[in-house]
Length: 134
Image (cartoon, rainbow, N blue to C red):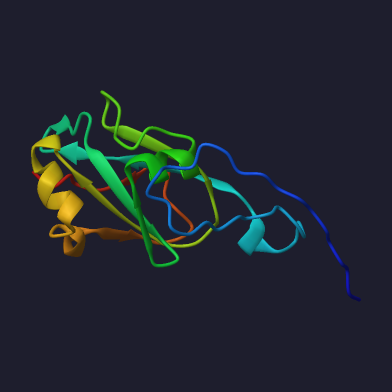
């Protein structure tokens, strides 16, 4: 059986540095690649949570951080005061995540910390835990 699906979408408020856009449609519902899931990441640092740690997430080989990460996940691109980050609107697959303290913003933006990213296999633990780079 073949089903033709036609749709129209409009995208607004993309970050200025957006170069490519992937849209996931929740159709057909039995295709797990199209489902939308939430990912919780807790970033402890020693005994204390890593408050306001910035994040990068790799999805399908694309590094997302800052405005692009916030737009895709409908969440801030850093952990909260409790060290918790919740990303929404993600397809169910393994992702790599990097969290770093704000003092390392320049190094992280240059990509020099990318090799320290940790893969979080799917299905995700809730919350998945990783250490922030300091």
